Length: 121
Image 1 (tube, one colour):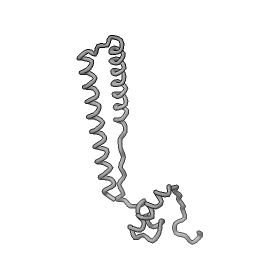
Image 2 (tube, rainbow, N blue to C red; image 1 turned 135 degrees about the horizontal axis):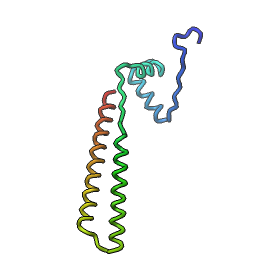
Image 3 (cartoon, rainbow, N blue to C red; image 1 turned 60 degrees about the horizontal axis):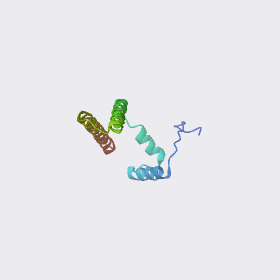
Image 4 (spheres, rainbow, N blue to C red; image 1 turned 30 degrees about the vertical axis):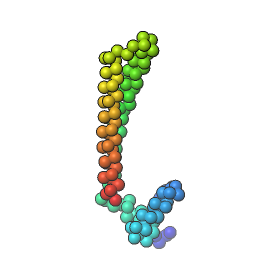
């Protein structure tokens, strides 16, 4: 190694499936070996990384807890009185509907970001 230009070694652990995928990509890239492929991919200045902001998930979890609390209160009232008030029912339906819309919207945005990211390779 004394005559090597590159003297720093980095290691990575892969599953069998990941290794097979890596070999496929190396073959498609026309690189001579893993080292050449890794340098090409890792040191590419145009390489883009997808960062997904998960801070809004804390808000989502908070809303889920609030809705769960409301459900528990409604269930307790129904079990005690055997009556479900229309306003309680409407509150429940609105809360669940809003939650579904928010989760679907966020999921669709994240899916689109992933499609754009993986489509760029």
